[in-house]
Image 1 (cartoon, helix red, strand yellow):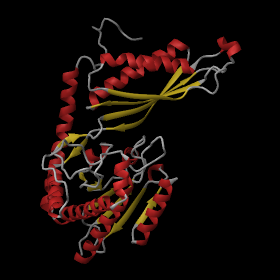
Image 2 (image 1 turned 180 degrees about the vertical axis):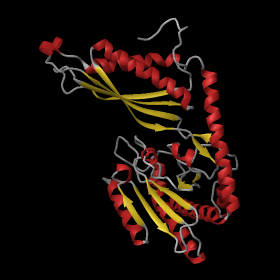
Image 3 (image 1 turned 135 degrees about the vertical axis):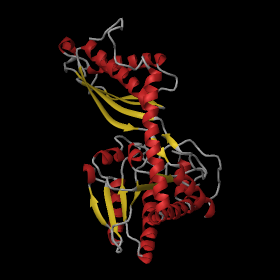
Image 4 (image 1 turned 90 degrees about the horizontal axis):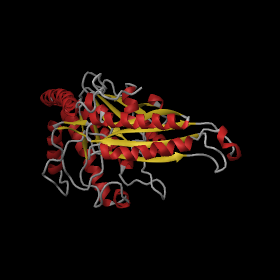
Length: 396
C-alpha cells in the first residue's frame, strides 16, 4: 500500500538525518515518532511537527486531492532547517516529528495516538495543510468539518435458507428498519444536523437469510453536546430495530472529531511571516477558528498551529488540487509552509515572552471551551437531559 511505502521511505530519510525513530507507535503500523535532541542539551522546549501521508477515497481509486502527501515532506524540511539553526546557535531543545496515518478515514490516527500518550511532553505542535488562499484564523475553538461521531451498527441474526426462512433472523431487515428510522428522525433534529450513512454489508446471497448486516454512519453537528444527543437517539433506533426483528446489535463508535483550539498569538505570527515571505493570494479577513488539525482532542491539550499558504487554484478534495500539488504552484506553497513552520518554532524556542503568551492564551481558551459546553447543556435542556420522573413516557 502507498502509505506503507511512504512511511518506510520517510523513516529512512529521518534516520539518515540523525533522528531516532520509533515505528508502530500506538499499535498503528504506519505511525511513528522521530526525535532529535540538540547537542546543546534537552533543557529547552519540545517542538512537535505533524506529518500525514494518507489519500482520499474516490470511485476511480485513491487520490491526493487534499495534498496530505505534502505534509510530511514539509514537516521534514521545516525540522531540518530548525535543526540546523539549533546546532549553529547552540540552542537546547528537542524536535519531534509525528507520522500520523489515515486522517481522512476513521478511526482518526491522531486521536488514537493522543489517547495512547504519544504526544505527551510536547510543548507545541505545528503542521501544514493545502490552501486555495493564504489566510489565518481568529482565536477561539471550532472544527473544519463539524464535530463528528463515526459509528458502525453491526446487526447479528441467524442464517437460514429461504425455503425455511422462518428459522432465520434477518439482520438485513433490522438494518433496513434502522436506516428508515434514522431518516424519520431527521425532522425532529435541529436543522444544522447532518447524518450520512451506508450499508456496506447486507448478506451473502438472495436465497440465504442474512445473518449479518452493517450500517456505517457519520453523525455531525456544530457542537459536541447536541451531537451526543443525536447519537443517543440513533443508538436507540438501532436497538429498537434489533428488538423488532429478533436480532442483536453491536454499536461501535470507532472515530471522533471534535472542536480544536486556535490561538491568536500563533495565528498572527504565522500570518506576519506569510506576508513577509511573499505568500500569494493574501486574505486579510480572519477566518473562523478550527484548531490546527482535524481530530481536535490534541489541540485541547497542546498549543499549536496549522499553517497553509496558497498551494492550489482549486478547492479542497479535488483533482485540481492534486494536480497543483504536483506542480510549481504547490511546490512554491510547500516551501513557504516549511519556512514559516521553522520560523515559528524557532521563535517559540528562543522567546520566553512568546511561550508565556501562548501558554496563557491556551489555558484561557481551554476554560472558555469548558464553559461553552456547560452553557450549551443549559440551553438545550431539557431535550438532551436524562429522562426524569416527570416524563410522561419512560423507556424500559
